Length: 305
Image 1 (cartoon, helix red, strand yellow):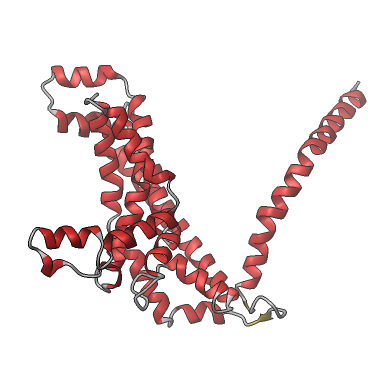
Image 2 (spheres, rainbow, N blue to C red; image 1 turned 60 degrees about the vertical axis):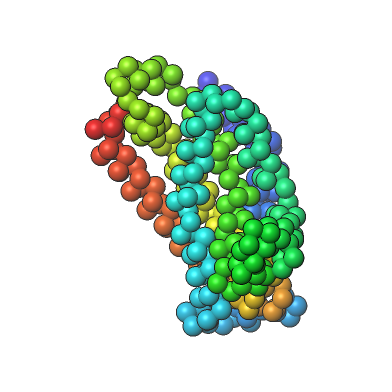
């Protein structure tokens, strides 16, 4: 009897391996192996053609004194400075739309449209709008503010902030969609009870909406951080090619240039791995602190203390 059960057990394991084996092999080849290979390349000097030469920690120590990398990190930091706006504004807008304002469906569609447009197209579109003879400067001259009409695409002070604004605008609708889905799951009776107690719109937003979509806020915050480090490359390159100079070169564009323009994929991989680890650690800390603060601010039912 025991022998038959054991045979059935081994037979089930064999069947499972037969069905899952090919999929696991593909995942290993496409996901795991590149990570292992990348970790090896990070410790080598390699131009992508000749065999890599092991150079220890040279790529990692080089990061500490690379002025262009520090500039790129500062430019990415400008995007992160705007992260609170990137997080809060979609939530506020979704909450306003949720109140069944006239034309709510139109607003939802209009905010999602930029998400569907290629970042390269958005970059070129803003080059046209903000060029020396673009629509913005034409309007400024027409209303008597010709002194403000400049070539916005080459202004070293403003160009990175423009790229950051383009990134937020192009992904803004995704945040509205996520928060709209979260708000749709909130029990309407919670809002009715708050109205009966005399709560105004802002009080209902803080005491009902925010606790109810806390998980969505955390998810969108993680997405914002990831996009800040990885989604500005196409926008920045199509808008200003990372210039003038390095004024709009972000970390992701810098890594791309090192790997594919300057023949230093080992150095680029070292930067990518370092950023991956740092961002991962920071996000874990953020989620732990956020959950802890949520436990201190709200009870088990999500009601503010």
